[in-house]
Length: 208
Image (cartoon, rainbow, N blue to C red; front, side, top):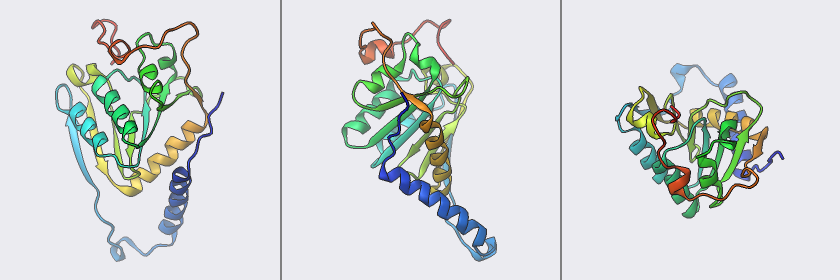
């Protein structure tokens, strides 16, 4: 079943994107305008602090967190999303179709407490690794939200503070969320605790 949960906040962001597009077309030259420069932080794996930085950014969220993820087995990041939900932040996650059948999928852990969790079924692989926080911060890069990405793999993660960039990413997130399906557990499976859903797997079986 497709989900169509678009809040007034989402419509406001889409409207902002349209206004931004029209403004860019009719605005004075770059020399006449002085937009605030974006700020950013970059982290490199292995063991470069990407997970800690992501958790800290999620801790700062006040209104909304939108997530696109391919592989998601990081307990600290998943738990930070649940904490954000519990303090009143709107949290929505779109995952790759592999998370629907993955034995130790984080989708169960995210959906059980009430995070709107959807599966992007329109593409062979939904390979984006993106978080959009409060419509003004973008987290992206090669870094999957996994323990392996933090501890073993060579990865990069960018945290970018830029309202205009965040609006562009939000429009793209909404596009993919619109053709995604609501996550539901595999029939006959039992709800799993965070300790089981996100427990470490053997090195041979862990996703990158």
